[in-house]
Image 1 (cartoon, one colour):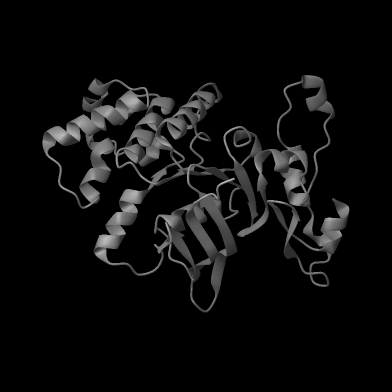
Image 2 (cartoon, rainbow, N blue to C red):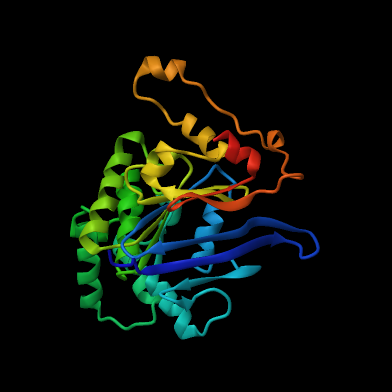
Length: 305
């Protein structure tokens, strides 16, 4: 079997906010790789640090330590203007709330073409128009929508506009930051199916950020679970659902809704209580419990699995 090619390497990154003498550590010692053509899920509750990781990759947050590499090239820290523009072309983001991420005063054509203006390349008006029309068509919208404004569209259509904006530069990596959480339940599946189709057609690579495991199970190849800025478990999607190890992962899985109403009423919700595991006397370590399945746990947690 041919060795997979790494696209993104996140190497022991730390992100801090606030005052230097009393910083708030939002992300602590986070490491993972994403391979070309992979959909990698990063899952955690609100405030877990998952969006901070995504924003660090697109250089919106500075690193206190660690390094991020794309195609083996460092993209964190100080870069030349040319390298910074290259990162803009290579890495694009789809945001959580489409209504807030779209300029309400600009028409759709301008919004989708925004990246073309910021990427440091010159395009004629006709080239920009053709690229916008193709991007809109690829996400299931009509080219004539380019003349309309965001408030004229539904939430699902607005998110499709956001996806078109991310696609127009043909990026190497797309960071999808909770792209369905602000949408009605009825359109979430449509957007997930669209992202999955585009990934296959364009051989895209995604970092898919979510707050619940149910939304990533069928779209992601591998999933990392993050809590309070640390990755606690990382495994293949089916591995994680079939054999969760960390008690926090088990608690998240127990909260996934069950379609059967009887089973839903009778299910046992688990609660993760860190005080039960004596971290002071038994420090957690990063352990490979089976091939490709890693967990940050201490002896008590590993024995409980």
